[in-house]
Image (cartoon, rainbow, N blue to C red; front, top):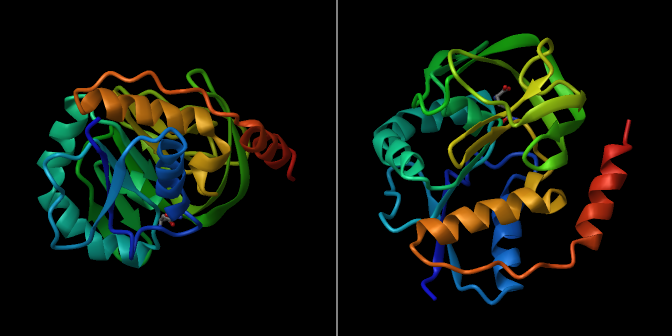
Length: 237
Ligand code: GLN
Protein backbone atom coordinates (compact mmCIF):
# COMPACT_ATOMS: atom_id res chain seq x y z
CA UNK A 1 0.00 0.00 0.00
CA UNK A 2 1.25 3.49 -0.94
CA UNK A 3 2.21 5.65 2.04
CA UNK A 4 -0.42 8.22 3.06
CA UNK A 5 1.21 11.67 3.17
CA UNK A 6 -0.08 14.52 5.33
CA UNK A 7 1.10 18.11 4.75
CA UNK A 8 1.12 20.04 8.05
CA UNK A 9 1.23 23.72 7.07
CA UNK A 10 3.21 26.14 9.25
CA UNK A 11 3.51 24.01 12.41
CA UNK A 12 5.90 26.56 13.97
CA UNK A 13 3.44 29.45 13.81
CA UNK A 14 0.06 27.82 13.37
CA UNK A 15 -0.40 25.07 15.95
CA UNK A 16 -1.66 26.82 19.05
CA UNK A 17 -3.85 25.23 21.79
CA UNK A 18 -2.68 21.70 21.04
CA UNK A 19 -3.47 21.68 17.33
CA UNK A 20 -0.41 19.52 16.65
CA UNK A 21 -2.44 16.77 18.32
CA UNK A 22 -4.53 16.52 15.16
CA UNK A 23 -1.67 15.19 13.02
CA UNK A 24 -0.58 12.96 15.93
CA UNK A 25 -4.08 11.47 16.06
CA UNK A 26 -4.15 10.86 12.29
CA UNK A 27 -0.69 9.27 12.40
CA UNK A 28 -1.61 7.06 15.37
CA UNK A 29 -4.91 5.93 13.85
CA UNK A 30 -3.00 4.86 10.75
CA UNK A 31 -0.23 3.18 12.79
CA UNK A 32 -2.84 1.17 14.72
CA UNK A 33 -4.00 -0.09 11.32
CA UNK A 34 -0.45 -0.67 9.96
CA UNK A 35 -1.02 1.95 7.24
CA UNK A 36 2.31 3.50 6.22
CA UNK A 37 2.18 7.26 6.65
CA UNK A 38 4.30 10.40 6.77
CA UNK A 39 3.67 13.92 8.04
CA UNK A 40 5.52 16.55 5.97
CA UNK A 41 6.01 19.85 7.81
CA UNK A 42 5.67 22.77 5.38
CA UNK A 43 6.95 26.11 6.70
CA UNK A 44 7.01 29.52 4.98
CA UNK A 45 9.03 29.28 1.75
CA UNK A 46 8.77 25.47 1.59
CA UNK A 47 6.73 23.64 -1.04
CA UNK A 48 3.70 21.46 -0.44
CA UNK A 49 4.70 18.12 -2.06
CA UNK A 50 2.61 17.22 -5.13
CA UNK A 51 1.81 13.74 -3.82
CA UNK A 52 0.07 14.67 -0.58
CA UNK A 53 -3.15 13.02 0.48
CA UNK A 54 -4.32 15.34 3.30
CA UNK A 55 -3.66 18.95 4.31
CA UNK A 56 -3.76 20.26 7.90
CA UNK A 57 -3.39 23.86 9.11
CA UNK A 58 -3.87 24.77 12.77
CA UNK A 59 -4.66 27.96 14.61
CA UNK A 60 -2.45 30.95 15.32
CA UNK A 61 -2.21 34.35 16.96
CA UNK A 62 -2.98 37.29 14.65
CA UNK A 63 0.78 37.91 14.32
CA UNK A 64 1.35 34.33 13.21
CA UNK A 65 -1.42 34.62 10.66
CA UNK A 66 0.17 37.80 9.29
CA UNK A 67 3.55 36.03 8.99
CA UNK A 68 2.20 33.06 7.01
CA UNK A 69 -0.53 34.81 4.97
CA UNK A 70 1.59 35.89 1.97
CA UNK A 71 3.17 32.45 1.69
CA UNK A 72 -0.26 30.82 1.93
CA UNK A 73 -1.45 32.99 -0.98
CA UNK A 74 1.42 31.56 -3.04
CA UNK A 75 0.11 28.06 -2.26
CA UNK A 76 -3.55 29.05 -2.86
CA UNK A 77 -4.10 27.46 -6.27
CA UNK A 78 -2.43 24.18 -5.23
CA UNK A 79 -4.60 24.01 -2.09
CA UNK A 80 -7.79 24.92 -3.97
CA UNK A 81 -7.07 22.38 -6.76
CA UNK A 82 -6.37 19.72 -4.12
CA UNK A 83 -9.73 20.33 -2.41
CA UNK A 84 -11.66 20.65 -5.68
CA UNK A 85 -10.27 17.22 -6.66
CA UNK A 86 -11.70 15.76 -3.44
CA UNK A 87 -8.58 16.05 -1.31
CA UNK A 88 -9.31 16.13 2.46
CA UNK A 89 -8.30 19.17 4.49
CA UNK A 90 -8.68 20.13 8.14
CA UNK A 91 -8.22 23.76 9.21
CA UNK A 92 -8.58 25.05 12.75
CA UNK A 93 -9.39 28.60 13.90
CA UNK A 94 -6.69 30.95 12.52
CA UNK A 95 -5.95 28.49 9.72
CA UNK A 96 -9.69 28.23 8.99
CA UNK A 97 -9.98 32.03 8.86
CA UNK A 98 -7.13 32.27 6.31
CA UNK A 99 -8.88 29.79 4.00
CA UNK A 100 -11.76 32.26 3.66
CA UNK A 101 -11.78 35.60 1.79
CA UNK A 102 -10.04 37.57 4.56
CA UNK A 103 -9.56 38.04 8.32
CA UNK A 104 -9.66 41.59 9.72
CA UNK A 105 -7.38 41.65 12.77
CA UNK A 106 -7.68 44.37 15.43
CA UNK A 107 -3.91 44.88 15.37
CA UNK A 108 -2.94 44.24 11.75
CA UNK A 109 -5.94 45.21 9.63
CA UNK A 110 -7.15 43.04 6.75
CA UNK A 111 -5.20 39.79 6.19
CA UNK A 112 -6.01 38.29 2.78
CA UNK A 113 -7.24 34.67 2.67
CA UNK A 114 -7.19 32.20 -0.21
CA UNK A 115 -10.96 32.19 -0.85
CA UNK A 116 -11.46 28.44 -0.52
CA UNK A 117 -14.35 28.84 1.94
CA UNK A 118 -17.20 31.36 1.39
CA UNK A 119 -16.48 33.08 4.70
CA UNK A 120 -15.13 36.35 6.04
CA UNK A 121 -13.83 36.84 9.59
CA UNK A 122 -13.53 40.03 11.60
CA UNK A 123 -11.90 40.48 15.01
CA UNK A 124 -14.38 41.53 17.72
CA UNK A 125 -13.72 43.02 21.14
CA UNK A 126 -14.97 39.92 22.92
CA UNK A 127 -12.68 36.93 22.90
CA UNK A 128 -14.77 33.79 22.35
CA UNK A 129 -13.15 31.41 24.83
CA UNK A 130 -14.24 28.17 26.47
CA UNK A 131 -15.36 24.59 26.04
CA UNK A 132 -17.61 24.10 23.05
CA UNK A 133 -20.10 21.38 22.08
CA UNK A 134 -21.39 21.12 18.51
CA UNK A 135 -24.04 18.84 16.96
CA UNK A 136 -23.04 17.87 13.45
CA UNK A 137 -25.39 16.10 11.01
CA UNK A 138 -22.40 14.31 9.49
CA UNK A 139 -20.39 13.44 12.61
CA UNK A 140 -22.76 13.61 15.57
CA UNK A 141 -21.58 15.32 18.76
CA UNK A 142 -18.26 17.18 18.54
CA UNK A 143 -16.35 18.72 21.45
CA UNK A 144 -13.43 21.08 21.68
CA UNK A 145 -12.00 24.26 23.13
CA UNK A 146 -12.24 27.63 21.43
CA UNK A 147 -10.26 30.84 21.87
CA UNK A 148 -10.66 33.44 19.15
CA UNK A 149 -11.46 37.13 18.69
CA UNK A 150 -12.45 36.58 15.08
CA UNK A 151 -16.15 36.23 14.27
CA UNK A 152 -16.82 34.34 11.05
CA UNK A 153 -19.84 34.70 8.79
CA UNK A 154 -20.89 32.99 5.59
CA UNK A 155 -20.92 34.94 2.35
CA UNK A 156 -22.79 32.95 -0.26
CA UNK A 157 -23.26 29.19 -0.30
CA UNK A 158 -21.60 27.43 2.62
CA UNK A 159 -22.53 24.50 4.87
CA UNK A 160 -21.73 24.66 8.58
CA UNK A 161 -19.92 21.77 10.20
CA UNK A 162 -22.63 21.83 12.85
CA UNK A 163 -24.84 23.71 15.25
CA UNK A 164 -23.49 25.08 18.53
CA UNK A 165 -25.03 23.48 21.63
CA UNK A 166 -22.60 25.13 24.08
CA UNK A 167 -20.10 27.92 23.37
CA UNK A 168 -19.82 30.42 20.50
CA UNK A 169 -18.68 28.72 17.27
CA UNK A 170 -18.33 30.92 14.18
CA UNK A 171 -19.71 34.01 15.93
CA UNK A 172 -21.80 34.99 18.97
CA UNK A 173 -25.05 35.20 16.96
CA UNK A 174 -25.95 32.51 14.45
CA UNK A 175 -25.12 29.39 16.52
CA UNK A 176 -23.32 27.86 13.53
CA UNK A 177 -19.87 26.30 13.84
CA UNK A 178 -17.26 25.81 11.20
CA UNK A 179 -17.76 25.02 7.55
CA UNK A 180 -17.56 21.94 5.36
CA UNK A 181 -16.89 22.24 1.64
CA UNK A 182 -16.35 19.03 -0.39
CA UNK A 183 -13.86 17.15 1.84
CA UNK A 184 -12.46 20.26 3.50
CA UNK A 185 -13.37 21.19 7.08
CA UNK A 186 -12.92 24.50 8.87
CA UNK A 187 -13.60 24.59 12.58
CA UNK A 188 -12.94 26.67 15.68
CA UNK A 189 -12.49 23.53 17.78
CA UNK A 190 -9.04 23.32 19.31
CA UNK A 191 -8.39 20.81 22.02
CA UNK A 192 -6.97 19.19 19.98
CA UNK A 193 -9.95 18.41 17.86
CA UNK A 194 -9.43 14.94 16.38
CA UNK A 195 -8.39 12.78 19.39
CA UNK A 196 -11.81 13.23 21.07
CA UNK A 197 -13.71 13.23 17.77
CA UNK A 198 -12.52 9.99 16.12
CA UNK A 199 -15.37 9.89 13.58
CA UNK A 200 -13.94 13.01 11.95
CA UNK A 201 -10.41 11.60 12.05
CA UNK A 202 -11.44 8.38 10.29
CA UNK A 203 -13.59 10.26 7.78
CA UNK A 204 -10.51 12.36 6.84
CA UNK A 205 -8.39 9.19 6.59
CA UNK A 206 -10.97 7.51 4.30
CA UNK A 207 -10.90 10.53 1.97
CA UNK A 208 -7.07 10.56 2.04
CA UNK A 209 -6.89 6.86 1.10
CA UNK A 210 -9.42 7.44 -1.69
CA UNK A 211 -7.52 10.53 -2.91
CA UNK A 212 -4.33 8.43 -3.00
CA UNK A 213 -6.07 6.20 -5.57
CA UNK A 214 -6.22 3.17 -3.25
CA UNK A 215 -9.16 1.20 -1.89
CA UNK A 216 -8.88 0.11 1.71
CA UNK A 217 -11.67 -0.46 4.20
CA UNK A 218 -10.53 1.10 7.49
CA UNK A 219 -10.53 -1.51 10.29
CA UNK A 220 -12.79 -0.39 13.15
CA UNK A 221 -10.79 0.71 16.22
CA UNK A 222 -11.89 0.43 19.83
CA UNK A 223 -12.72 4.11 20.52
CA UNK A 224 -14.02 3.56 24.03
CA UNK A 225 -11.40 5.88 25.56
CA UNK A 226 -11.89 8.56 22.88
CA UNK A 227 -15.67 8.46 23.26
CA UNK A 228 -15.57 8.61 27.05
CA UNK A 229 -13.18 11.58 26.80
CA UNK A 230 -15.67 13.32 24.49
CA UNK A 231 -18.57 12.55 26.84
CA UNK A 232 -16.61 13.88 29.82
CA UNK A 233 -15.56 16.99 27.89
CA UNK A 234 -19.14 17.65 26.76
CA UNK A 235 -20.19 18.01 30.39
CA UNK A 236 -17.50 20.57 31.25
CA UNK A 237 -18.99 24.01 32.10
N1 GLN B 1 -5.94 35.03 15.81
C1 GLN B 1 -7.25 34.53 15.44
C2 GLN B 1 -8.35 35.08 16.35
O1 GLN B 1 -8.05 35.57 17.41
C3 GLN B 1 -7.26 33.01 15.53
C4 GLN B 1 -7.01 32.50 16.93
C5 GLN B 1 -6.75 31.01 16.98
O2 GLN B 1 -6.27 30.38 16.03
N2 GLN B 1 -7.01 30.37 18.17
O3 GLN B 1 -9.52 35.00 16.02
